[in-house]
Length: 279
Ligand SMILES: [Zn+2]
Image (cartoon, rainbow, N blue to C red; front, top):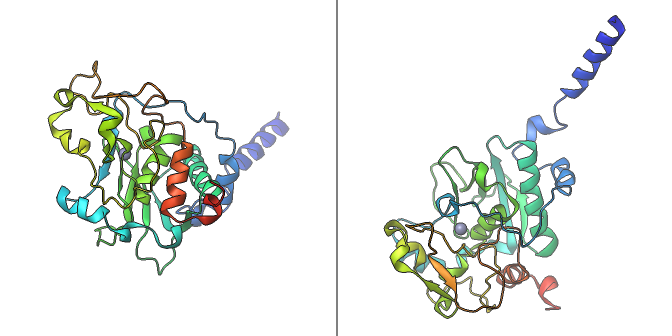
């Protein structure tokens, strides 16, 4: 019996050994996160949009939408050489770290964009922040040089956003991409039911100007991870705020993963020649 008790104690001790290297450097993704992330199961194309998706995803732009439009016309919002320095800020659990690592690895494998651990000298960087209750999910558009109260531009992910599609979605905002349905040519592809758009959300349906730097000559993409779902920002959630005008193509609002066109867009905006040469 004593032997059994001792063995149990040893077992518990082994189980409670901290994650290797975790204590000092959990502000960055670790090799173990990437290795484990390959076991994360997700199905590209499968919708995991929650019913209140519109309330949990916000693109933080700026105080005045006019300056936003001016700002997004600027190529300064593109991260130089596609390198995005980052830190993790908050208590992400093992699975959540794996989901983030899985998204980051997808960018690394299919585009030339690289999320790299922030170094001392990096002044522009992304702070991937664990959002508290009610904080939702948000990102700024492209690289910013503002002086933030807390250094680094925040990408906020709360527990509802920690799914494969939404993490990729928020990080695409960080690279400079807006919602697909705000493209200048969207009226050819979706019909907006303005009467059902919540009054406070009308701005979110404004179209981009043709000067939007992230327009890289790709076709309108219903299957984009950047397209909102049909009921986004609805006053009456039994009715859509937008519908597809063309029958062809996937349903809008998928959050399973990148569409092929999303990957092409990233590669074009970031001039990833090795990935676009054969397209
Ligand atoms: Zn969004």
